[in-house]
Length: 110
Image (cartoon, rainbow, N blue to C red):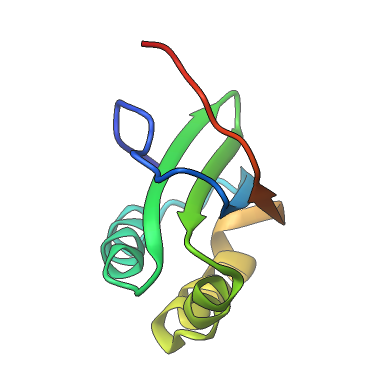
């Protein structure tokens, strides 16, 4: 799992964050390529705003940002995304949790 080296450039709130926290299995066969294709495909979806991703000591965290709940639902319903999710459950993830949150406020430095 890899992402940009800077925070996602999101608009002024409100918008939504999909927070995917995972623990991987030892099976890496096809994971990197599938993750790359899904990241590219997600970026083409209407309502997509950006992504941030990190992995440390086996725990992965990916946060994707979306304009609204309808955009999130459309991405979840994407057939290729559903196939990748099934592979993830079968092969690549020991466990995961997905959380969806509305971002009400955002600020940063500089």
